[in-house]
Image (tube, rainbow, N blue to C red; front, side, top):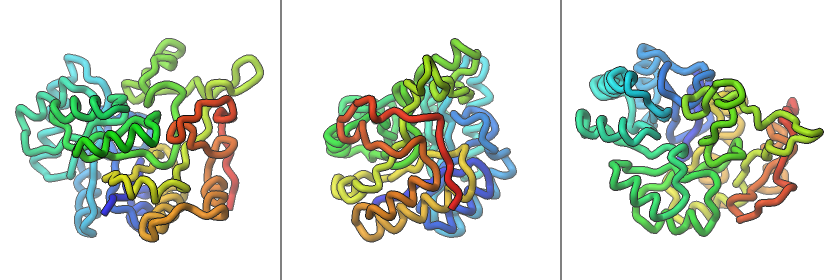
Length: 295
């Protein structure tokens, strides 16, 4: 059975995800996560979150998916030690292959998942990530339907985003924010300058992803985990989107027009797009800065 994986930027979002039927949640500690400005969890809160999740028989994944500097290697390994000794998580989502190697060396029992920020979008990339110790790979959001199929056929567990923000670069790997404001997306500090207007339009701001109409296809492919983006979003957003996808997965069907419209009203940037999944790269997939409609 495929897993529904929801974001938890703070404890309220975690509880919302569980109430809405998530099979698993992903979150970050106070360091090394790619959403530095989410609420995130200190070590005491991580233990509390782990207890809440595992009491319900659900899974918890911790993101350690920034690039690590040399001076951060020891603190990062100490964090991994904390996760290991306290049995906090069922997997660590990781980008830095150097850190992955050190975790495998010192804590081989920890399960590693290759972050979407590794920009893996092909079967050969999945196999390479597996060789580096990744038991699951979070496929890049730029992957097409055919590319996802090929990745699943490698036999490595594939986690695919189904809802949330698209990035104008490859899975958040650009340096635009770093160049403009010295806030690097690879360090969890992206200021999202691509969402701003340039020359009278939002030329770099893509519409949000929504694959609600293709859930049955992804189920049939054998995708292991369906991931909802949004560790910066509210508990209300997490609950509503998780509940919607819970129904689609359980009923093995695409979203109706009404369900698709309801998701759009929760949050969207001038509507949704499935452009990369359908191999469509057109101007109509761009959006404004974003709109929220109160329900």
